[in-house]
Amino acid sequence: MNQVLVLGAGQLARMMALAGAPLNIDVIAYDVVSTNVVHPLTQQCQSLSLIEAIAAVDVITAEFELIPTDILSLCAASGKFKPHPEAIKAGGDRRIEKTLLDLAKVANAPHHIINTRTDLDAAITTLGLPMVLKTALGGYDGKGQWRLKTRDQIESVWAEMAHCIAVTNNQAIVAEKFIGFDREVSLIGVRNANGDVKTYALSENVHTDGVLSLSTAIVGDTILQQQAQQMFTAVAEQLNYIGVLALEFFEVNGALLVNEIAPRVHNSGHWTQQGAQTCQFENHLRAVCDLPLGGTALIRPSAMINILGQDSVPRAVLALESCHVHWYGKEKRAGRKMGHINVCATTPEQLQYQLMLLGQILSQQYFPTLPR
Ligand code: AMP
Image (cartoon, rainbow, N blue to C red; front, side, top):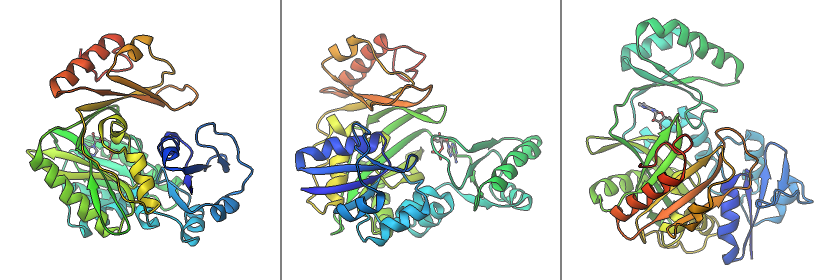
């Protein structure tokens, strides 16, 4: 029996617990908001302090990157934390992430760090307009971002950015050249302590208001897949990474640019639960527990649709043989990630048909990216 402590007690810790059970891997979670050690499925408080949990488990890992530095340091000091805390920091600070991508020599959007108004002028000169501005710390799902399209917006956008920089310790803004991408894709992969790397099929991702809506495993584009794998390996090796790592890309004329990295299991890899030989949650646990990695091959065309702000779906969804519903057991809140639906088929055409059937059952308002 392996015991794993996950920093963060959300749906990713929950799905790790579910994937770990058949391997006798017991997962407990630390809720950084309530500061309680909890059961990842029931959220029930365990009678353990964080210090006691750190001492009790074999391995510590994380389901998100915005971990308070003191907690990360405490866990790292135990020698049980995987991946390396530097990977978590790179995922949580866009400045560190950009340095990492440049060190690993992987293509990414040209950028400029902004601390002052003078820096903003320099960024406009270097990168041109339009540009995308992102907080270095604390941004996720498209939050903490501005689009600067024309010069007359400079003063109002700067006022908001200056406020952001002033109210958060060590905050800065990362300006990025606007990339007119053809589509967004991501690659989920896993690396173990021996340096073995396995990657899943690329996902094509469609976002609504900055939040992931639909991910579809890409079948057969080997050139793009090889390009992504090479970039994945370069980043994972640079970090001496252990566990599952996600790279999000912009695809422009068949070439990939890294948008961001996530040092953890990732929403765009949820389809692996039904569509891959071994799901991303199991492979993350295998890697951090130093067990052989499971196969990552795509076993059938697959896609995932997020359920946002809804705590039920019509029974007809479950009646579709190709659909698997995964709820996260969370309280309903507008826009909140409440669960997802994995859809599988025997051919890519069949998969599109199944998604269309789902689009006839689910509302356009909450599921805008389903084909209809
Ligand atoms: P991020 O939080 O960095 O993933 O950004 C959220 C979304 O904003 C991305 O999924 C893209 O759709 C868009 N985006 C981010 N950076 C850029 C960029 N440099 N150029 C164009 N669109 C971007």
